[in-house]
Length: 57
Length: 138
Image (cartoon, rainbow over all chains, first blue to last red; front, side):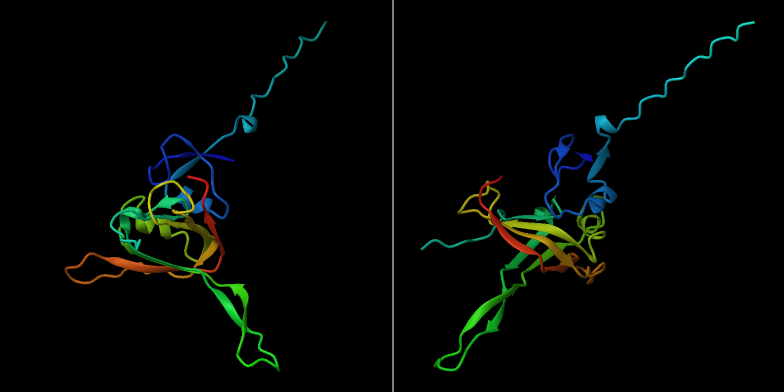
């Protein structure tokens, strides 16, 4: 999971938030201090649809 | 004789959130249970260290605005978190250590502490957790 800073009380807004050990991430998300950003590896690729070949007569 | 006068320099961080501008007092107590190990043949009582039982008490102005005191603390009640108090805003060093409690427990939060004509403030206490001092990282 990666997070982005939204509020200057945490750090510079826009920077990645790297949590210290023991930090309650859910509390930070609920209060709007940070937001979760999808990591590139977890992006869903669009499904490849194979076209059916027309049946031969 | 060097002494410390606290005006605006101490830094208070709760769950990564800086509450310095809402804090008016901080008392960080490093403490260990005191276990007696006196035995026959000794003329005085002696003690040894038991479990750590550290504590941080903060006095904070209560604000219900977004990303202020209440928003920071409301989801921490009954859970553990990390708190840091530094004497000054300078980088961590041997002369400006970041006193840290990791996995410290917040048992209660006074959600209203109101007196007519006064700014609302609350006292909260974090108990337990692992004590450490950070002298190297900013």
